[in-house]
Every structure is written in C-alpha cells, then in structure tokens.
Length: 570
Image (cartoon, rainbow, N blue to C red; front, side, top):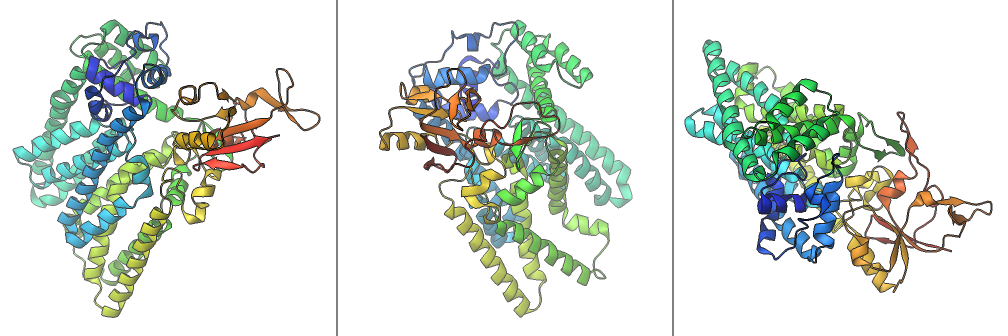
C-alpha cells in the first residue's frame, strides 16, 4: 500500500507514471480517487519523486510513500482509510457478479451457495480491503471471462465490443491476467470445433478473426488511451532511462529491445510503458523472492509451495467440500456412463464449467513453475471460479440423485460443511490475514509454516501502539515488517532493532556487537522477520540466517494482534 497509494495519487494528480510501473494503473488510480478531494501535500520536490539519479532505485517508490504518508503533514490514517474504501467497493462488485453468474448457470440456490463461499472466505476478507491488485485481478479475470464466453455463444457486435472492453480492463488491473490470452485461445478453438462440426474450418476462421479484432480493440482503444492519460507528463528522457535500467536483466532480449524502441517514439512510448511493466512482472516472477517456508529459506521457490499453502490457508470445510463434489460427480458419471452422449455434446452442455476448469489448470500451472512464492493472495483470481463451480455442481448433484434418502444425507453433509466453513471464518475475526485452518495450527500457530502475506503484513502495528500506551512503555526496540512508520507514531520512544547487531557472549547473554552492552528491555518483532531469522537456507541461498535463533524458544510476554511478538529481555 505504501507504494500503491502515492503511485495512484500521482497518476491522477500529475499524469505521470514514473512510480510503480510494474503494476498497471487502474486499481491504484481507483483507490486514490477519494484522495483528490483531500487537501494533501505531495512531496513533488523530493528526490524520490524527481528521480534524477542515473541509476533509479526500485525501492524509491516505498521511500516516496513514506514521505507522502508520514512526512508531508498529511493524516496517514485518513489517507489509508479512504484509499481502501474503493477496494471494498470492487470486492462487493465481485461478490455480486459471482452470485449473478452462478445464478444464471445453476439457479438461485447455486447463486446463494457461491455467494456464501465468497462472503465467508478468509482470503477474500483478508485482502479485499487492501490497496493491492489481487482482488482487482480476480474481478478483471471474472468479468473478462464472463464476457468472452458471451461472445463465443453469440458473436454479435455488442458482445465483441464488450469482450474487448473487459479484456482491456482486466489487463489494466494486473499483469498476471495476461494468462487470459492463452486461456481464451484454447477455449475459442475448442468452442469453434464443437459448435459447428460440419463447418469447422469456416467457424474456426471466423472466431479467430474476431478474437484478433477483440485483442486489437483492447490494446488500441482501452489499454493505450489509459496509459496515455496516466503518463503524458512524464519526461520521455526519464522514461527511456528508467526503462533501460529496469529491463536490463530481463531474460528475453527480443521483447526487451522492442520495448526500448517503443519507448523512444513519442506517441508509442505510453504503450511501451505497459509492456515495460509486463516484462518487469514476468522477470520478477522468474527471479523469485526470498521466502520462509516450512523451516527453510530460499529465493528460488518450491514447486509444492502453492498446493500446500492452498490446503493450509483455505478452510478445511472448503477442501472437504471440493473432495465430496469431485467424488460424487465421478460416481454419478461412472454410474451413468452408458447414457452419456458424445464428448462434443457434453462439452457443449457444460462449456462454461469446462472453460473455468481450463483457466484454473492454466493458472495453477503458472503458479507451480513460477518462483514468486509470497502468499495465498496470488491464487485469489481462481477462487471465484472455484466457488462458482462447486455451487453449480452441488445443484446438479441434487437434481441427479434419485433416492430421497441419499439426497437427504447429501444435503445434511453440505449443510454441515457450510456451517463449519462459516464458523471457521467468523472464529478468526478480526485476524484474517494470519488465518490458517485448524489442521495447520490455526491462526495462532500458522506462522510456523509460512509468513509474509500469509501471516504477517504489518497489519498489527496499531495494536502494538495500543500495547505500548497501555503499558506506558517509554522505550522499546522494534523490528517491524510493514508499511507503517514507527518514527511517526512513536517519536523518541523506540529504537530500530537489527538482530544482526547482537550476538551471544560467553555467559550466554545477548549483547550488542559494537560495545558488548547487554540487550535489555522491551522488544517487538514482526514474525516475518523472526521466522526469516531462523530458517535453514537451501538451494544455494547465500544470505545470512540464524540471527534470531537465540529468541525463537523464548515465550513472548504478549502479541500485538497475531503477527508482532513482544518480549521483555532482562
């Protein structure tokens, strides 16, 4: 948020896209709309904005955010609150659309079931109010898929234009939505082949031509104008320099060089800014991120990271519901396989569900091969599809079960699972970011498996302030992971703590390396830093670890929320 809030404000206020180009602008701009009605001071003269140094720093966006929120005589709490309200609106729009589409396919019961799964989702609640691109990506994916399937079913002009519009909007929400392109190619080819068996070549040519037209309209009439509006005031010399710096390590030289060339052409450079961000996002996914997972530290990622995170972070009831639906559908299929029509007819009758399963498979494949293992939030775009599919499947199973006794038992199990699902969500209130299901240690112990946005994202800082005020603490060491600025909230009452500055002496006391003075007093540590300082390095990980081993077995005297451990060292 500390990067996205100033970025969105600068796009709207100055029409300059120099900050945070690795994400498209729409989510950030939408979240910053309320800020335009506030009397805010923007650090326009700051070096973090002017960005005149020869080698621009990626971290400059966070430094600028700190200046904007905490060092410019603004009210940071009000700014954060008003920036989050548009995100909640997007979440509600997505919830309504999940209900709407599910009801269109499976009726009112299915619509209500999918809405219940969405509304009680700990993951959706946790990330649906934050100024990030994750829920926006889910909304963009959902809307683009909905209107693309309407285009396939009825390729009239209106549906072609709607498909173009929402494809463009989706691609302006988050760069990972580029996965829609191979997805749409696959389902378009399949639909063309099964919809008109006697005219397959002609139908395929027609859909291919219209799909290319949709892509062109989305790029030329949606993406390009939006980038022009957001970037026409950025000096071209600065954009060229920053683009070359950001893309220098990119592993795809032909694509990189093409973006270089686009950036040097005045009217094309705004579109070049889009592809610059796309390449930045893909190279970050490929390069990875330093992560703690199951006691290990790595920057290369684990292929099994997302499957295990999904099983641990999603409620047990949802996982059991998925298994129940899969097994029941398989049983019904095997029992009625002699009565089932041709594969082509089955696909025609269930093409929407089939398409959503294709997208889920593509998205999972991308997640498994990528190295950016930083949280369940990266799976959010598939969750609305999962809820829709489960709800529609439940409705269809109920219509297929002929025995009243079997139907009664099935309904009873469904009611129990939904009740468990809702209770699991309500029981974790208000700590939704650190939610883990009961088999994974729950909200209290889930940090032992993975942290970062799965558990510790700086969300408990105000609770730390409340603890300090309640205990009347005059001085505390803080090792905080998050976007808040302790210097703003606790001036003169805290010291930044770096665990690498201390060591254990011969008396097994923790002392500062510089002067051998003993560490005493209050210490607050974000659990993300704590676990990162205890993990075992793997895969050639060459950064220092083990610097928090001396405290990991100590019981904290308190916790601020769930993610900040508070110790008293004596």
